Length: 581
Ligand code: HEM
Image 1: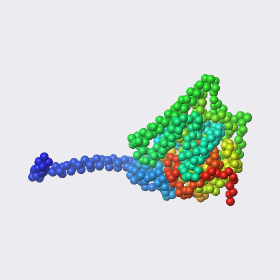
Image 2 (image 1 turned 90 degrees about the horizontal axis):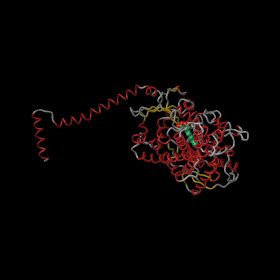
Image 3 (image 1 turned 45 degrees about the horizontal axis):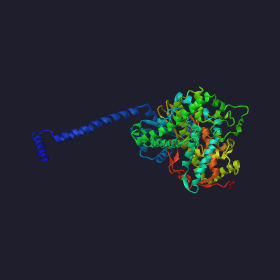
Image 4 (image 1 turned 120 degrees about the horizontal axis):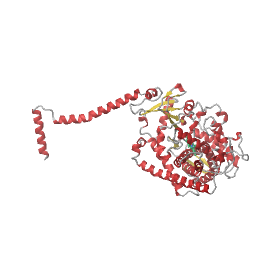
């Protein structure tokens, strides 16, 4: 059969030759060639036109005035991040910061990204009530946090911020001191099994912060929480991991490819656990509220809990914490917290306060909106404080002389007693507070903040114009290590926060909690919790890090962590003051 065919083909070819006709082999080649070349030509022309159009666009022309590395057509500088691990990306970003200074332009395809690293430029963006829109990357949180405070914008964000910020009033925070103490004690007990071993302290910090948040945000205690509390904590941690993967795995960044990946199925599963619990708790709390109301019992309102009365013990201004001075130039809405500070009152979780204000008509929050706010607080409050406390313990494990000073301050406050810390005790932990602030300077848990510009902005550096449509990335990590603001900027030195060393420093050179109208609403909560948690751990254990600070491997992520783990060893502490030479 095949011989017959070959013969026929040979005949045809000979006839073609005789008649001087174009060969069908040439013809087939020609068709193949045409099939390949015409579409290619078409695609190239379209791409070239898009490229020309991009080059002529306003954003492209204005963006290219700013300093930054040259990019490829279409891809811009995206290829520089291709195939890189997150810790390599940190190094690339830092290298460009050295090369180009405090304003760096990059193109992610047609998207203009401008990194700013000078305090005056940062103030222009963060202090503004206009540039409050988050960058498109925050959309990864949307399925989880919906329109919660972290990603909402415009009038929705403004009205919700007005409702949420007062729930972080100092009186409410004081009522959490007992919860912070109980859980800190719990973590000390759990860590006992690690005495003498090297272990990752972040696991413990993470579990403790989720437990504390379950109680303070939703009113779920260890006693009342069933399996669903544990599942929720695990799901929160796993969701953080999925969002982390989406940040740096380029095929997961696109919704179309993400939705086909196994990560999408996992996300669906974890979100069903997270949303399932928040919905269940909100429903039962609301029912309880209505039942109590029917019986004539109405819980205290936020106004009751934060009102000053004659009997209350008002804190004098000289009793304010160091952080109140550090952050006083932030122009945010958290300072009112100190004005009418009254003693500890009844404890209500954030969720109870939101349900109460929605029921009594003070706020217009729907159940769905309350759920989104609770989910947001759980996310924002969890990984940030877990990373923050883990960095403090590792740094103190490296700088034992500083740990000794921290311990001596604790000994001055508590002696050899094991008693829980009071709010007043925390006001005396001035050195520990400096250590926490310095650790947040060198290792800010939120290493970058990004905003989308809706109108052109002139920044202070060279009066550069950043065009509307650009994403501005504020490099917290880098600005915290600028020698212009911190002498010897890479050295861990808690004295950077001595009043005399702070007085001439630009407020926006220290922004671990962001600043301005969109600053972290949980700042005071976080600092109070960190003090109690770290005080309890350091009164019980001496910690040591075998890894020197220069070998910490950082993971550039939504939350800054160590890719090599937060490894320390602990030994039970002898409760005696340390003789510091
Ligand atoms: C060391 C601990 C913490 C750090 C370093 C931190 C840092 C930040 C930063 C930098 C932002 C601004 C993010 C942005 O603009 O993209 C932010 C926002 C926020 N944080 Fe925190 N945070 C911490 C703890 C907490 C805690 C404990 C809570 C709640 C219990 C919390 C709740 C929030 C909320 C709700 C927002 C959104 C505020 C808004 O957009 O109006 N944070 N945080």
